[in-house]
Length: 159
Image (cartoon, rainbow, N blue to C red; front, side, top):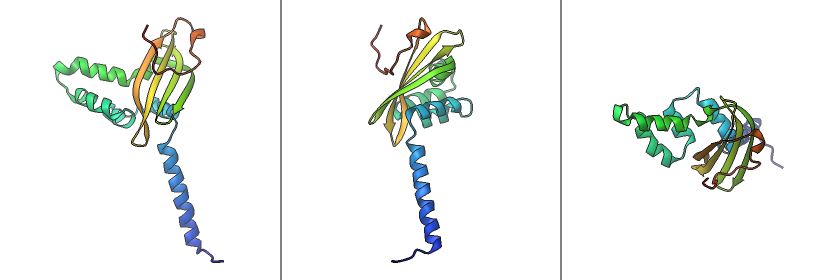
């Protein structure tokens, strides 16, 4: 039997730890990515948030509008900022649930608004470049907290 040199054992264990740590970070669950996103809203620029948390199609459409400082683009720029800030409409969270299906996922976030009105977000995620990224958000105010849905639904029927 061949013995490994102690430095080889250190290198192998370091490599295994490094690979497993990188794998875990890149494959966070959609709920973890949502919670990370909420925290990033107060720490990162809108440009960084777009690039890190949203799908490329939304970034390529929204980033030019966000960076256009002209008066003509003000309405579109504000619309992008409103879209990015969607979690801030919820002042407290009641629960979260997720459904994951291969390359797509839906996260249900239930809580209350500033006016103490029950509010939900269904956040559609897609796996893009090895990361869970936001594809679409559907928010709705509810009549009563007892009407919180029991499961995420990222493709609700039109009212």
